[in-house]
Image 1 (cartoon, rainbow, N blue to C red):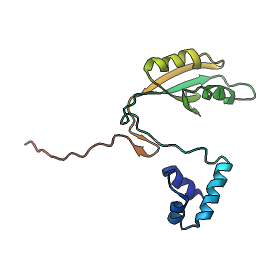
Image 2 (cartoon, one colour):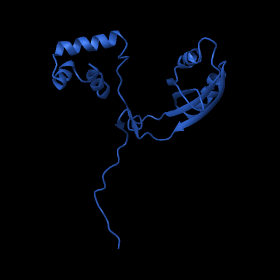
Image 3 (cartoon, rainbow, N blue to C red):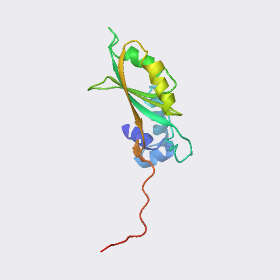
Image 4 (tube, rainbow, N blue to C red):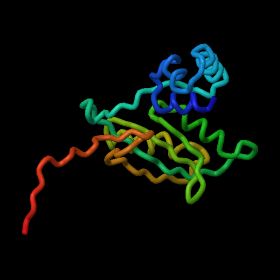
Length: 159
């Protein structure tokens, strides 16, 4: 059944009939499996991956390293929950290594992102440090290529 999940992760617009044909299954079985995955929160949602640069929209995306003091009994969970409540926050991950959490946010300007870090993120009790990294260009995300390089049509040889 994980094959259904893999196909939906590749393309969430596949219909149950298409998945059934690809996996040599009954369409009703695929529909039932998808419904069960949704009910069990294995499938959390469906999204389109958009190249906003090509759409003419300008956003700033930042990856923020966050160092925190774990809370007694809750570890990192309570602080992570407080962080992911903010609308600007797209993703929060618990990390191993030099910092504890990775927070990914999107804003309209560098200043907006900096303001979020200074006034909201760094003021949370238990946050002991942050380091902000701005994403300058996306090449690949979720197995999709952004702005694939155009093939050179003409070749020149200089001798």
